[in-house]
Image (cartoon, rainbow, N blue to C red; front, top):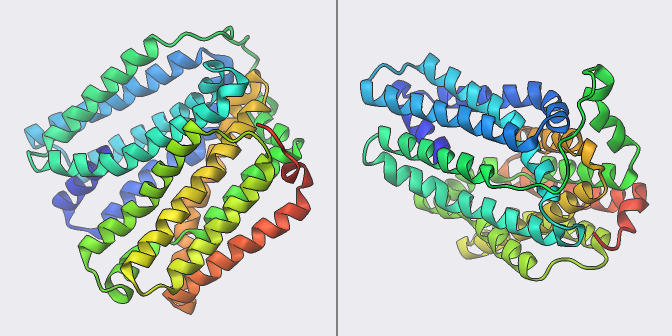
Length: 373
């Protein structure tokens, strides 16, 4: 909701596509700069309090935007500053939340809990933008006030969380401790393979940045078609995450992860070659479903095989790599499309994703041989 409302607000203030790009940059840079330090903090302090502090900052930021739109004193520079503060808070919140979950369930329940978390995320991905747009129609202040209220509820919810594990003992801050997540991942081939496989799959197979071109020039659908194309991967992801929540992965997890990445690549190829809207939507739904299988296995594998005292730092590295690959994947898609054309660019990405899956099966046998999560 917040992302849609900020986008509409910025475009209303400036009418500039470049300024819309600056909003993304203002969110991404704090995450890039602070994530490793945030992982260290998540391993040294009470994770529930970190999450509450981050959500309080995000709640305050939403209130600033609500008051600014109501009073008319918001400028583009103020919006960018507020968005950067939100990005900084999320840099600490995201890895802390990821590290918090394993302390709330048993190891056997972790894959199922991961699927529930994925279903919640995909539901928000589908409903959030629509809700933000509808609320913005009532006035720019309304969505930001609602966002602030929802953050307040989240803070209250975290207050009721009870952890079985004790609050970690604080270590002296050092470069070694901050980079501990990178060192741990490098020494665990299965975790390194899972994170790097996801990174390169997203980097090569990201066709979402080119969806406006497919909607207008290839499928000839217009803006409404772009809307359903953007929603299709989330619909597939939500469907698969609900399925995995009811029927969690029990055996052959490593093979399933490689198979999911290969299916992701095949679906990308089908989408690239399709000239029919229904076939394209189906390919994107399959793409989203395959992506969730990979995400659930990776998250469960990383969290189940990481000591609690390292989970914040390892989660931070994981999210830094995945977040960076999403941003760079869009850049790669745009550059490849400019060089070779839109359809060849997506086709190359799909073939490359399958190639990475096959190579990683050879390079990371420890990941391939993972059975249970």
